Image 1: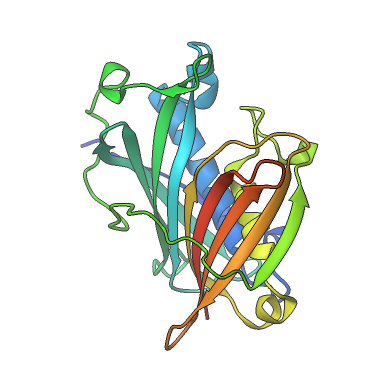
Image 2: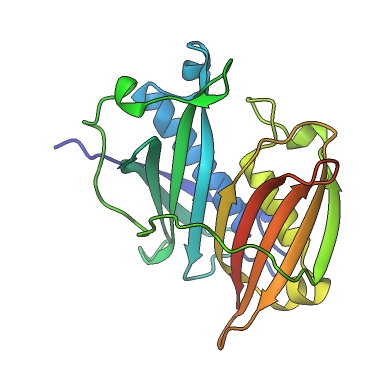
Length: 247
């Protein structure tokens, strides 16, 4: 029977690692993007294929948990599949395994298809059949709203550059995560490792936009926990919301 998932091997390269030679979580997000894009292309609904019909994919939610660290020159297997639908959202899940076939990370995501001209969501049932869905969740998440930052302790500003943009000509979704992680103090980044990242995308941003990151530390017994929001500096509009755990 034909399997209802797509997988490929990734060689962990030196530029995908952090200061300790560990595979950086941002690299996992890039691997997820590669897996999802390639699989969607094989199924006939990649970004390029949808754009020919004046449509495109927009990421709404993303949630990653990391269980084991991987290091430079090791190999990992990434696996992805469409895991279901929830109203106007398409769900896609991910698993990553190391060379010993141990599960090292899991993730789930939620996507919309929008009309490029009207910038409005389209009904998935009118676009795709359901026979490619594998109704199994790698990470069970109903995507409830993430908390707001009520008392910001750390702030940082960023400006959208040309290399932040993707084929939709807006900021690539991984860049939001770069800004979120880079906003934390150096003493956290040098000492701790992110073991869980949750993202809620609220608004597109474009070349030249100025971004403000606000972070609130929270109390948790074993790990560091942060709530975070990104805003457009000019208008104050919220563009993304995060919850991250560090160990």
